[in-house]
Image (cartoon, rainbow, N blue to C red; front, top):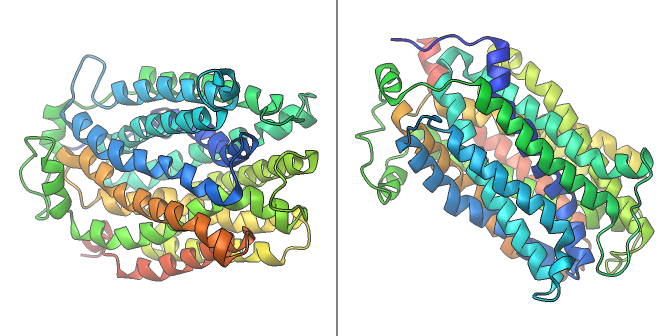
Length: 447
């Protein structure tokens, strides 16, 4: 048997929940550091708070992947997980910027960090089954398109999420002024709107998408030599890790340097731009100028996500012409140069050029590795291997979280711009490592 060929709109609806997931994720990426600084965190401490995010991914995604492979209910296989994740993530989104409500019980900084942990765990619960769903439902010849549509929706959602605080202030008059320890209203309302959008978009996917039964998936499955019998217990995740396909091992290094660079950008972009472009001291986190810088970082993050959304539609055509590996490598080089260029930009408006490069790399990072990987994985273990693949996303983030703060404080003299420079070089290393990867689908096609 062969899987049905899905129409563009079926693929769109199947991936639509990513619009809301990434809207919430973008709000977190662009504003969590600012919120934590408002609650009292120093610049060099930010990466330590952000370590929560990759730790949750390391723990949650393989477990959710394993159990979603084993699940079948009247609600489906993957859908129950990303619906539950969306509900929990929405709670975290609403409460994080309002953590000062709980100061009678705990310091706002620790409550805010706790909400960040809830959001990250919940985003991971929702995100991993979504990627597995694309692998489950699409034929080999539609996978690049499927992950590209997913990337486009991620981009559109991130644009809205990143621009919300700026838009609420400049278009609707919501205040971005703050006092000590109090998050401005534009951030609070942005997070509430993001929570609502997350739930609505997930419900679109849940109500419009049909999943294949385990029996149907088994009839489609042609196991590769790298994958053996289906795991019988949760602890067999470790055995699956040892037996991961060769392609996954090769991609792991590409992912390592890609996500090491991304994490540095997300954590330190606001303080780096506030210091290097706006000329503020590293101790300033509450002035109106700092809030303006933070809002502009949201705009910049929205720009790179908007670029990624449109570039994602071009990726299948580019990959068809020059191959997925070359497409990914060139995209990473452009992104690396974009990050390096931030250092020499004369003002905040020129940073738009830098973010165009980052957006091209971001689109490819979200699509190409998964499109390459899916061809080397058994359908029976799509969920668990997508979860294990997340190790190579979260481990570099954990390493950066541990060393990033001390580097900024002691090696860079609290000048966070140099964290972005390291991120740029990290992208360039990832680009070089792409050429060592074996793309199984490309090999089959050439034969």
